[in-house]
Each structure stands twice: as structure tokens, then as C-alpha cells.
Amino acid sequence: MPDSFTVVKTPHGIFTSEDHEGNKLVSSATEHQCRELTHFYLKGLQEKKNSYATPKKTTEKTNE
Image 1 (tube, one colour):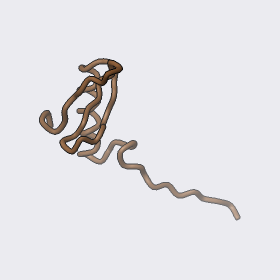
Image 2 (tube, one colour):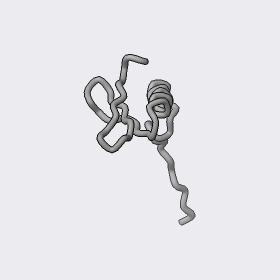
Image 3 (cartoon, helix red, strand yellow):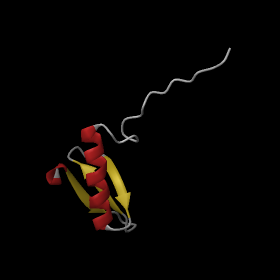
Image 4 (cartoon, one colour):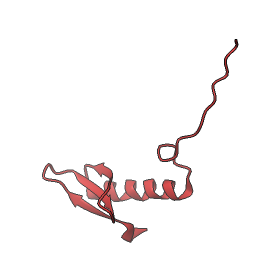
């Protein structure tokens, strides 16, 4: 996973991770935080357990 993204510093001083296709993944105030959060995000995508990456279907029951 370490080679699956890069971290770049924007002109505004924010660190942003990008995948190999240039898609933005995570932004953070520090490079360390950006790397840690990107690892967490990608792990969640890989395991399909990150609720932000894979929304769960919900059914709403109504009493009609």
C-alpha cells in the first residue's frame, strides 16, 4: 500500500494524497497525518468496512 499513493504539498500549505491516477484522496495539515489518514482510508476501501467509502443500504419501515 505505501506505493499506491503520493503526498503533495499544496501552495496553501495543505498536504493532499493522490492515487496513481491523480485522484485526490485525503487532505490534512501535516504530511504525517495525511499519510496516516490515507492508509486508514485505503485500508477501509480494501476491507469494504469504511462506512464513508461503502455506504450501507438502509430500509425504512413505515407504519401505514
